[in-house]
Amino acid sequence: MTENGGPIPARPLPVSARSPGKCIVFGEHAVVRGAPELAFAIDLYTQVLVRPGTSHRLNSEPAEEVANEYFRTALRDWWPDGPALEVRSVSRIPRAAGLGSSAAFVAGLLAALSAPRGGIGRAELAQAAFDTERGAQGVGSPGDTATVVAGGYVAINGGPGDPIWTVRGPDRSWDVRRVADPGWVWVVAYTGIPRSTGEAVRAVGARLERPEGPALLAEFDRVATQGISAVQRGDRAEVARLMARNQELLSEVGVSHPRIEALINAAQPAAEAAKLTGAGAGGSIVVLPVPGREAELVRRLARAGGVPTVVRPTRDGVRLVEP
Image: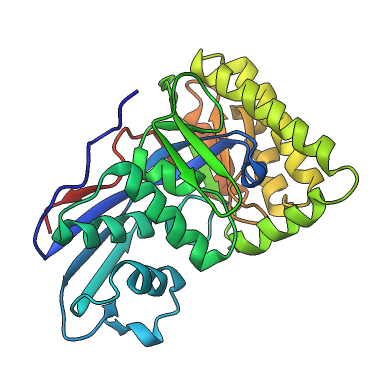
């Protein structure tokens, strides 16, 4: 199967890159331990501009004062001896909301850093983006970074056909495959409660170390495997059933939240299914709307205190754009 967009080409500074956000439908958290995950790139974007500077800066702030650990990690690992850079980042993806803001920033920044050094293939970029995000967080899987690099629907450790890439970590590897786009519209809604991916991943990891952990992990695996197949064949009813079960599992491992549950309940009359997406413990939900009731769904979620957005999968992963 082929990549979307081809390699990142060589280009001199200044360079600008645009990356999509992402939304996880099945398998968050369990993917860290090798279970399958299904995600898709969404049409909310981060754009990163890199140009020569007098010192390393992000949005005019000196690098040594920047709180963004992803920025510092990327400079340390991928631009150690390079000249000073002025980096600007603008994003429509809410931060710490479970929609891939850090993955989009990292992928865009590394794509832009790679261009003046001869460009980079997407498999190599997916690995580099994962290494950078994991280096900043200390834990995690390549699901987010692989999705924003690849674009479209992506299955991690599941799905049909041969892998387009394999992303390697210190103790396991993850195969990345394409999944057919069923052509659905989705709605995401931010709870307004930011969350820490690293903290949530570590908390779920501790839960899965308990005696009931292997059975929970096996159920996550089953739901994601069947969910990937259901999306591939466009079976909305089965996807809805499995999303509901996935939400039950996420609640059981402790990453749901009263605000998440309130938004899920508010969505129900206009939704086929809804669940948290991303690390949880705040963040966002993803909703499969009843066809034709998307506007009603958005109103319901807004009245319940969420920040809803209608999103569509985008085939384009990270790519260079005009500065």
